[in-house]
Length: 148
Image (cartoon, rainbow, N blue to C red):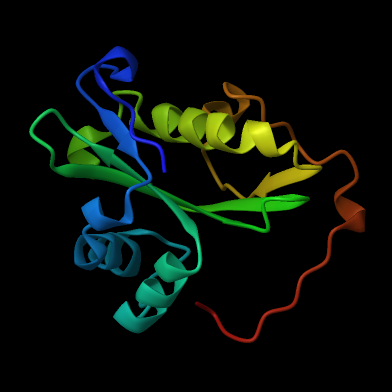
């Protein structure tokens, strides 16, 4: 578990992987009502996804949750960064970049072959921390059992 303390705070924000700090109800509300990729996602689905992932919470100086990201990984070969969300009142302050940086730094010691993500409009945020477009997207395939 990581908790970034005073020396790693940026603009008053702290990133933590402590699951006890997450407000899962708030994360559910953000994702199910405001995140286009998760509109309508059930609380049960959010709770199951949180339980099976490495979670990153962003917290403001008063300790209120300001953002969220989760990583699905085997910590050996692969990870998928997903459900990155920054509360509207905290956007434009570098919280997304801070979350992506924390994910990168947390995963670096595992020397994973690939860390993937999908983004519609935040390419520059992820590029700042080392993500690049997939070299051969034709190799990627997917299967979906539901819309959530």
